[in-house]
Image 1: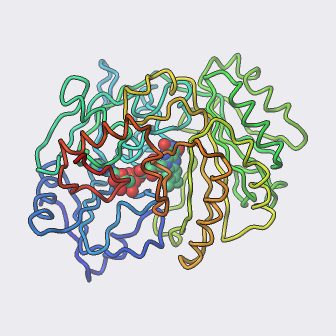
Image 2 (image 1 turned 90 degrees about the horizontal axis):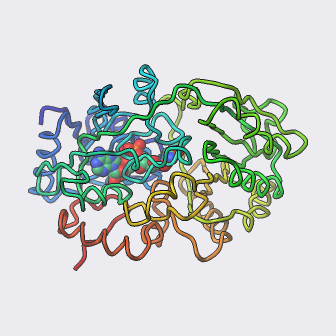
Image 3 (image 1 turned 60 degrees about the horizontal axis):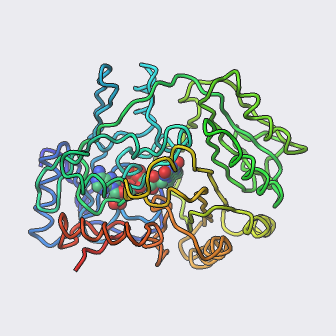
Length: 443
Ligand SMILES: Cc1cc2nc3c(=O)[nH]c(=O)nc-3n(C[C@H](O)[C@H](O)[C@H](O)COP(=O)(O)OP(=O)(O)OC[C@H]3O[C@@H](n4cnc5c(N)ncnc54)[C@H](O)[C@@H]3O)c2cc1C
C-alpha cells in the first residue's frame, strides 16, 4: 500500500482505533489508511489471503461499531477526501472519506448543495450507503437520491463503476444496502442550487402533548420544511435557550428551503404550539444549519445504547419518553424523530435498497452511559421505548446499534431483502464484507 499501516502495539494504535462512539471493546490488529482504490484492493487482497477480518471505515460514526474489528484489519478511507466540482454538469465527485461538512462548505462557494444528514463529521460514503436523511430530505430527497455514480472495489479486488447504466444491480444495492457489496472509493452526486434557507433551532418545554403536536405540525408542513427533533433534558448547549437548561425540552433543528417570503407562514403553526416556545429561526446560509461537533480526542467517545424504527406516528411513545426523562438513566437520554415523506416518498420503493420510503417518521431512542457495563440496562430501556411504537415498524440502518438482533431485516421490506441477498451473492458470495448490517448471500 502507498498509505500508512498502524499495527497493534504501535504508539498511535489507540487513536487509530478510536471512533465517534466508544465502549465496543474491539481491538484491531491493524489499521490501513488507503490513499486510493489500488490501496483498497491491496488491503482487501491481503486480508483475504491471510484470512483476516475487514472492517471498512470512512467517518467512524457507526453506532454499531461496525467500522471496528477485534483482531482484524480496519480499512480506513478517511484520507480519500478529494472533491471536484463540475459547474457545468452540476455534479460533485468526491472521495469516500469526504465529510458532509467540508463537502457542503465547498459546494456552498458556488451556491450549490447536496443534502446529507444533520452532522458535518459524518462521511458521505457511510451516510449514502445507509440512505441519508437530513435538512433537505423532504424538499430534495435522501442523499442516495442525488447519487449519480460510485466506484466500488469488490471482494475480488476488482474496481467497478455503479450507475444507472453500469452494474445497475450494484448501484441499486449500495443506495441503502450498506457496506455489504464492496468498498466505495469515489462518489458522484448531483448538486442543487441553494444558498440560504430559513432555519435554525426551535425549542419548547417537552411534554407528551408537545411531542404529538410537534410531530403533527411537521407532518402538515409543506415539503420545503424538514425538522429534526430531539426530546431530552436540555444540556447547557448554546443553541438551547438558557432558561430551558436542565429541564425536559423538545429541541428541533428546522430548515425551510422554500421561498423566504412564505417562511413565516410555514413556521406559524409551530410558534402557535404554546407557552415557552422559542426559536432563533432566520434566513441563514444553508451551512449555518450545521453545529460544530466535539473535536476528536477532546473527550472520551460516548458509549451508546440505541434503538431505531421507521413508523407513521410517535403518539404511542410520547408518555413513555416523558417517563424516561423524569427518571433519567445513564449520562444522557434522547428520543429523536424526523418527519420524512415529501421528496423521499416521491421515489418508488423499488428504485433503491432504502425501502421504507412510505414510512413518515424516522425515530430513535438513545441512552449514553458512562461505562459499557451499564449498556444492557440502557439497551433494555431504549428497546422498550421503540417497542411502544408498535409491531409494524421498519428500521433505518444508519441508526441501528449492534444489539438489535432483528434490525437488519426490519430495515428492508421482504422483496428488497430478497433482492439484496441476490446482489450480495453476485458481488460478495463469501461474505468478506460482514462488519455491517449484514446481508447474508442468497444460497
Ligand atoms: C452523530 C451522528 C449523527 C448522524 N446523523 C445522521 C443524519 O442526520 N442522517 C442520516 O441519515 N444518518 C445519520 N447518522 C447515521 C450515519 O449516517 C451512519 O452511522 C453512517 O453509517 C456513518 O457513516 P460514517 O462513514 O461516518 O461511519 P463509519 O463508521 O466509517 O461507517 C459505517 C459503516 O458504513 C460502511 N462504510 C463506510 N464507508 C464505506 C465505504 N467507503 N465503502 C464501503 N462501506 C463503507 C461500513 O460498513 C461501516 O461499518 C448519524 C450518525 C451519528 C453518529
